[in-house]
Each structure stands twice: as structure tokens, then as C-alpha cells.
Length: 74
Ligand code: SF4
Image 1 (spheres, rainbow, N blue to C red):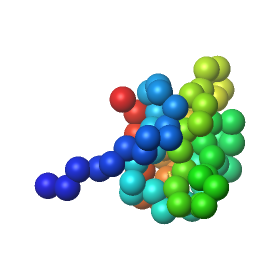
Image 2: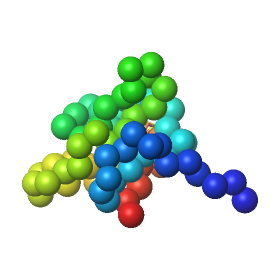
Image 3: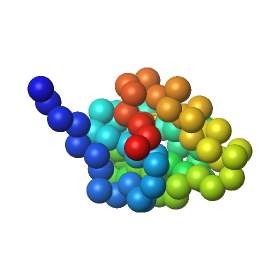
Image 4: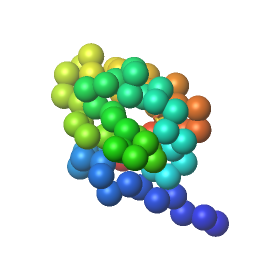
């Protein structure tokens, strides 16, 4: 069984991106305060964990919208 790799650049907290990410930019459009792509456009990561209910909702929306299921929560 292959184990997913959780990117080190995710900020500590409940939301994270793992190596299924194809850098499609969907989560960064939905929740730009929390997700961004690496400078080389290799993958997205959580650079800021959401605090407000609205931002948490947007991050949950990003989970649902991610085409490859690369965003998860602890
Ligand atoms: S929506 Fe999913 S595949 Fe697209 S950039 Fe975000 S984590 Fe990566």
C-alpha cells in the first residue's frame, strides 16, 4: 500500500495538502487566504490555517472541489 506524502510546507493545523495535488489552482481560487501554490507551481499548500467560520467553510469547500482529493483534515 502506498503512503501519501504530506507536504512539509503546510502550516501546522487541521488542513493539509498531500502529494496527490496536481496544482490545478482550484483551492487557491476558492480560499486564497489559506491555500497557495509553491513558487515553481509544483503543488498547493496551506500557508495559513483558517480561523473564522467563513474561512473554515471556504477550506471545506476547497476539499469538496479538489479534483483529486489532495486536501484533507487531521
Ligand atoms: S484543488 Fe487539489 S489538486 Fe488543485 S491545487 Fe488545490 S490541492 Fe492541488
